Image 1 (spheres, one colour):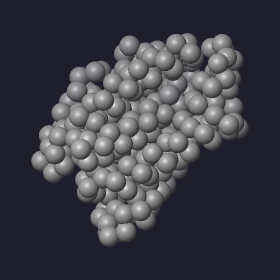
Image 2 (cartoon, helix red, strand yellow):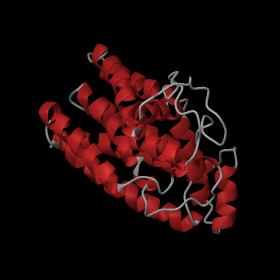
Image 3 (cartoon, one colour):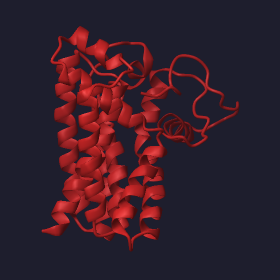
Image 4 (tube, helix red, strand yellow):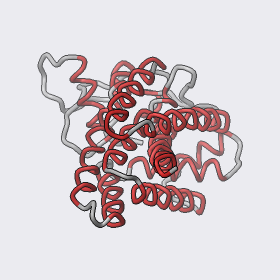
Length: 262
């Protein structure tokens, strides 16, 4: 999922960097295109800290997209399209690539060993193209339908909380090497609960109850999907996390748009 993560050194400067800042800078380094150095070494402790701070990446990306959406709010279709484009450009389409790989692997109905081979195949098949088309259509329509830029901001934030779910302790990596070996199984559920409570508190003040409700449903869907992937692949990897980020964002935005229109 991330070419920035793996065994070896990270070009961070030496010095006494707090654990909190290391977690945030590593999450932003791995999960966005922004120039943060991150941790100097890669291990499961680093992975856990980065995953704990993953929603911070959603906050940063959400601000970028929501500001543009606000600036173009009088042209809602254009605002929605460019807000979506900015969100993807901020990640180098990392999560889109993850979802494409997962869709091809799941669509094959192959046994776990063969499905994992498809998951690692860089080529995209019909299932990948179809999954991305559906997700982007739904996300674009949701962004174009929401009543304020706050919904865009909180949806992108909520998607990163959903991305923490497949990395919780109930799941195991199917390989100890690579990005999945660093992060799968490192997240505590109470981290997710705290992040959801923070998101819900802020969103209630400016966007009503709909984001809190939609994001809670998105978390449940992320858990179901993670369980399904774990069964099909006999474990999870970084692509599984990335797919939950994108699906969690889309589900939150779509459900919030529906609820707010009722």
